[in-house]
Length: 206
Image (cartoon, rainbow, N blue to C red):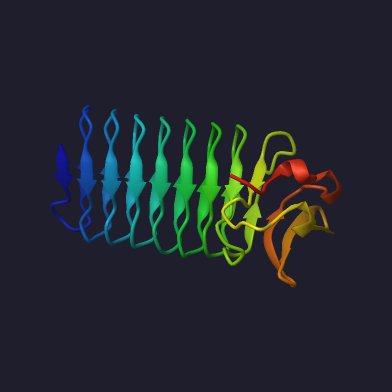
């Protein structure tokens, strides 16, 4: 089924079979069905819940709240300041241009803050915090697990362990990258001792 938002600031819901949703220009409430859905939030500050299935959600413009529910979901916030929760399953969470909150939930998730100063929470499982550029912003990683989690720099290229700088700042660790003689701070790892961070916590090649 293809389901369109009918009224501004309206709510639309899916069925048990796969659906495609298009939100209206207002602040929509969109609830997916139990199967695999594709949801486009459109303009406005939307609240989107995917339900079951391996869903793809695109928040697009506006400050959205997105919940992937169960399944292995792809969640793309779009612009503005968004809150994304992966729920259960192995999810991909992609922030946009704003200062976003990304929470992977349970499962082995990939979190990409993109630009902006984002709060990244991996949740349970072996998670990857992926950076696509050194200018992605200064992120805060709240629950970096010494056993299982990784910082993925493979999309940037030309980097290695010698590029990484670790600095203790109170109870936290600052992760900076030196490239071409320039140093860029990428992330703050909360409640992590810098001495426990090794090359095993980074991915430099895909």
